[in-house]
Amino acid sequence: MNPSRALALALLVVGIAAIAVTALRGDDDDIDVAATVLPDEPAASDATPEAEPEPPEPLPVLGTVDTLTGLDGWLNTEYQTLEEIRADHEVVVVQFWTFACRNCKNTLEAMAAIHEEYRDQGVAVVGVHSPEFAFEAEIPNIIEAADELGVTWPIALDTEKRNFHRWQEGRWGYWPRAYLIDSEGQIRQNERGDGLDGYRELAENIQRLLDGEA
Image (cartoon, rainbow, N blue to C red; front, side, top):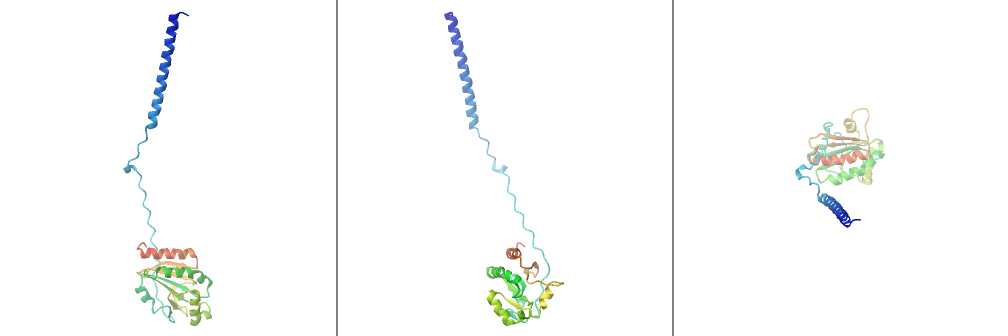
């Protein structure tokens, strides 16, 4: 091959190689630069605010509290009327029960917890003992049973069931049945039977009344 032509060919190859290396370095530079670019952080004002929790529905008003009359006395208290108890307490729970009732016994632990938790916070628990059978009407039997069952809150002795029937108008009366009464004398919960979910709700609603959220 002609030396001049060989030299020209060699220079051409070197030139092409230099162009290729430059092109590759340019791509690498682009990649490196692109990799260092981070997306802009959103401004604090662009953040979506958290939604405020919806307030709970207010407790219903189910009626107005009645009185307790024609009683054969009280146990576990110096009070003599429901009105005296209500005057000294912001919230009152009145439960109709009788000591031999299995369903009533199922609620006593929950009632005891309410009594212990809230008695120093303006809440009174009143058990209205309304007997189903004759032996449950005997006061010595009631005293003995209350002691055995751990009923330490006030007991109104409704031996003739006058209040049991007046508070539970209609064909059916329930053992147990609990009423939650607010400071205005309004009934805010009427719990029939021994469902523990209902008694957990009773405790929650007591707290709501104390917190002014009901």
